[in-house]
Length: 441
Image: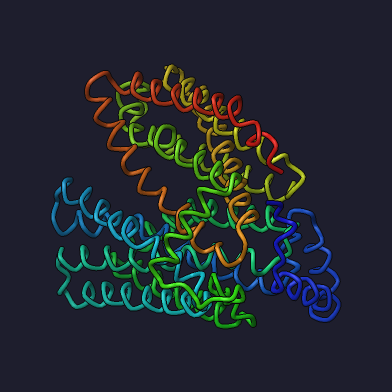
């Protein structure tokens, strides 16, 4: 199935709207900036509104990665509960993602995003209020963790699917690259802002700003003109709209039967289970192998983040000019090789370089995987395929547990090396046994 053959009326309207909007709404300097190749997708008003909202949701999400753990540790002083509060968030993702994907295809994506973001405002606001009034308890943190994960399970497929609804197909890679720029910038800026707020005003201040950011994101979402509701599968094909359960089953069937989508999901699953979990062992590398302590570990993550940001800009600039299949396979295979180099390194500068390149490979390959899945999914299936894509986050949790257990038996370096070697070998096998994977454009 060629993505160019899947017609999307909203894409056409987005194109015409952007063309007319350029001459009427922007001053010449701003228009000149938006004409830069790396910013092509931002010339389309609907994507621009969606992108502005993504800035605020990404910042709030990364702020929460610091604030939630800090709050729980303040309340319990328990490392075990610190890990548990993270673990409970995987449950809604696993159980609800298929349902959320069907909802994104059957009902208004815009409405689902608005409801989800307002729910985030309420949940973050509740925690902030409990902190300021001195009534915060660990059970509140657990309840809101599950609640936020539930909301995210519904918000992510709708937001991801809306990208394809707001730009023409030829700008999709650029749009996803720009989203990756936001996400990876927020990965650095969000925790930093949360840390400053917590140090200066307490955890409640961070939660208040997180609620504010989601409220601002909601305003941008409301401003979207198009509802971008996808027609239910079966509508227009001589039969009634399918039941919700059958709709979910059809999503899985489509993902399996479509070669390009199946290959993309296979590659991301291998990456999530065998490669990315090595970051779980970074404290071991920093303390016992590289002897650089917590600050050195922070620099390793910063180096990876810089590589990811650089890669985001690269993907946004090149757009659909990259051979997607070759870059997906090569990027993940190189990721595995770099993890092996990192595992073998006892020289800190080499480890920093390896982490930079790992960040580059990660974002390049995963941005293209998302592009392939969205490009080869018709609008009526896109929410479900993106929900399955986001379910791979659960695979990451399982992979992190696996590498931790393996490291306890054979050591951190051998655990990471063996899993990375397996992942690289599987990429080579896919390349040789599935020629179509290399041919994906």
